[in-house]
Image (cartoon, rainbow, N blue to C red; front, top):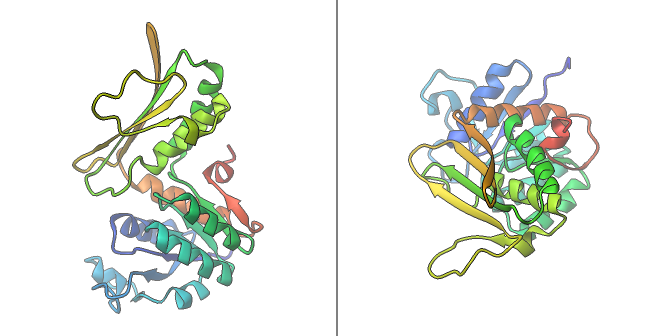
Length: 269
């Protein structure tokens, strides 16, 4: 690739936003054209590098997505669902690749992304890491190989600032398990057990969420039967893996036809 695509990072002040900014700048494969924050944020109008506590970068933090997206070939977006839906419409107008790492969407919000995907490339995943996406494939295959004598439980752990549960990755894994079993996840999802719940229902897929400290991300998929258990596990120790995956997606999406894609497409899985 001779042309280095221009990238906008949304939610610039957040932990993922700052990691994405450093990843884009250090990559040598793209250049940062804008950093976006919500209106009224203290970083608006400041040099991005100085706001991050370093040397000036020559990029001023803005709260105007329309102007920023017009100069970009890709937007990397780890924010909140309502913002991502709005950004999708503006990215489509700019014909820019929209990489969405945001989690916690409702079905209605996911449906609102579809019109934008008719005009631009949207790459959305609950997790951008290679390891997790391999785990998704393994989960689907193991679930297909085992019958309902094996209960499926998904246990995830994240830092104490994460606002949604189950995590987007846990839902990806649950969806993969359901697809392997040939069922709809919404019909067999079992969450939030508390009190006298009665015995576990055969064929259900259970979810448990742990929140504490600075845990980057841990996911276990347990297949438990009488006398044996199979546990598939992924542990993330550095959120840079998500930033690298998001940048890989932004580069992969250049020149792709409009539509909705995920990291399995990006990674050729």
